[in-house]
Image (cartoon, rainbow, N blue to C red; front, side, top):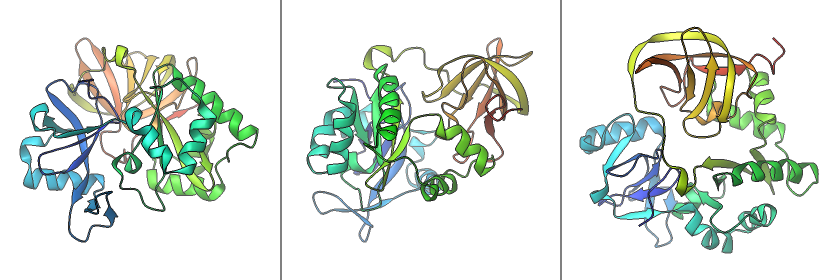
Length: 307
C-alpha cells in the first residue's frame, strides 16, 4: 500500500472521516476529524448516508470526549484502525467526471498523471453547492501549477479573486493581520482563484519519494516572542508546516502550521513573526499556528509591505 500522506482522508472503524494533516504516518496517522455519520447531518454521501461536518474546536472536543486514545496535537489513529484511505490523486478522475469546474481546472493544469488531486469534501463525496475546490499538486509540479494559475487569470481562462471572495477568505481565516496586509501577501502567492464563481486553491504536498526530513514534533516551549529576521531559505514555504530558515541572533527557523502563512515570504526578504519559541536540540524555532486560528500569531514580509 502507498504511504498515507498529507491531504489524504482516512476513515476509522466507526466511519468517522479524518483529514490527514501530517507526513509521519507509518504507525499512527496524524489527522483531524472532519465528518461523522449522524442522522440529520447536513452532508449526504453517495450512499445516501448523512454526515455532520465538524469544525476544529468541535472535532477536538468530541475526540477528547469519545475517543481519547486518538487525542493529541493532532488526532493520532493507529494504522490498524484505518478502514479506508481516500487519496486525492487516485480519485481525481472520478471527481472530474461529475464536476465540470474540476474538469476545467484539470484542463488548465495538464500535468502528468499522479501530479494532481482533489481533496476536501469533494474527495469524500460530501460536497454541497457552496463547497470550495481544494486542488492538490504533488512535489515539484506545484510550482508549474502556480505559474499556470497566474497565466490562467491573466489570460481570462479562470477568474481572479473578487473583493467579495477576498473578504470571505479573510473572515474565514481570521488572521492576526489587517485585511489590506493579508490581501497584499495573498495576491502574489498565485495559489487562489475562482472558476465560475467557485473558489479554488492549490495545495502543495510532497511526492512519495520525498517524505523524509519532515520537521520534528513539539519541542520544549520557551514562551511567546516577536522577532524580525531575514529569510535565507523559503523553498519549503508552501509545505505543511511551512518552513522559513532565517538569519537571527537566536532563532534558526520560523515554522507555520496554519495555511494562512504558507508562502508568506521569499528568500532574501525581512519578516516580522510572532509565535511560540520552541527548543529543538541546539536550535530554537519560532512556531506560528499553535492554535487553529493562530490568534495573536502571524508572519508578515516587511519587505513586501515596504517597511
